[in-house]
Amino acid sequence: MQAVLQTPVLAGRVQVPCSKSIAHRALIGNYLAGRGNIRNLIWNEDLRATRAALAALSVPGQDVWCGASASTLRFLLPLALAKGGRFVFTGSNELARRPLTSYLEIMERQHIRYRFGELGGLSLTVEGKLKADTFVIPGNISSQFVSGLLMALPLLEEDSEILVEGALESQPYVDMTGAVLHQYGVQFVNEDYRRFFVPGQQNYLSCDFTVEGDYSLGAVWLAAGLLGQQPLEVTGLMPNSIQGDGVCLELFRRMGGQIAVKEKSLVAYPSELQGLEMDARDCPDLVPVFAVLGCLAKGRTKICHAGRLRIKESDRLAALAEELGKLGAKIEETRDGLLIEGVERLRGGAVQGHLDHRIIMALTLASLRSEGTVLIEGAEQVRKSYENFWQDFVRLGGNYA
Image 1 (cartoon, rainbow, N blue to C red):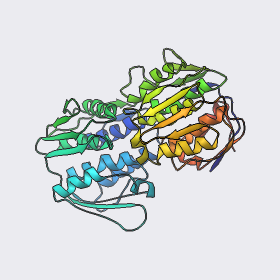
Image 2 (image 1 turned 135 degrees about the vertical axis):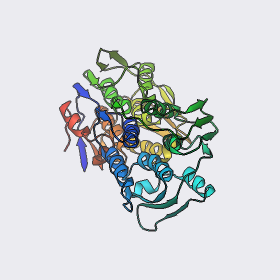
Image 3 (image 1 turned 180 degrees about the horizontal axis):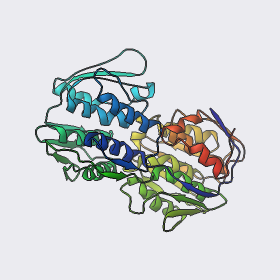
Image 4 (image 1 turned 60 degrees about the horizontal axis):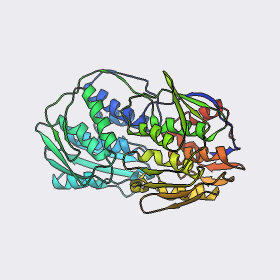
């Protein structure tokens, strides 16, 4: 799909979908509890992958298809090993490129057999059973490895510990895992994100779980309100969220963005923005949004500690520099971030979505301040996290062909 965007004027109210990160964890908790109710669950490709993969875990011999969802694979692989047996995890070409080294080293240490298929896409066969142990995980790759173990290790017969090498990045995502597990009656001890003690023989308990709205997606619409010509109201975001991406409100205000907090919504008003220095260590998913804001703010924007974005659905640092550069942005990538000099407006042009939902949403934001038409190739990939993105875009006054 090619989206053709012609400097839309957005206004009105939009409700953001549920937090994908929280929903993954809640689906796993519900599965392990055996029953329960999840409210405000709004499906997208990744969440459907987790639902289908969880169902496949209960059917001997059935492949566990993870789609393009790294969360699905990294959360369910240790879960399958805790259960024990033989499983075949499959997924897209994009998923095959996402690192799994931390888990492969664990399987080698515990003599759990694994092998990769030679055909296209991911095909990983594992056979064996995970044993309680001391698990050493690097802190600078992905917190998903820590979260995956935190969800699986309580099922083992004995206690385990996780030791983190170096500083753990994306700490709020581990806090999110702990908050969800707590609701399902599962506990662990977090010793300053350096060591996690996980008691064995725990049971997941059923509960009624409500998934809050997604701040990383809400940040897109709030940024649209700041860049646009009319206020834009966003509903569904919790004021005291467990999501690390809630820091977007502070970052918007540091740039001079006017955000009003109402009883059940946030309203973003057109604002004159200033560049900022952004440490993305704990909020990497916000980088595409703030990269676009930096391109259109006065002065310089520096984004650092974002090196992990090179191993997401795309190399997001390279993709942002390349595609926003095509639109006239003064942006360059560094080893672990971006350097940006703001301009008044961008120009139109043809850009690529890089099969990456967050790059596509960022380029849509850029079209709000572009002199000409912006053509985004592969725009359908936004459904990975936000199935109704284009419908909401139209409801707010946008148009695409």
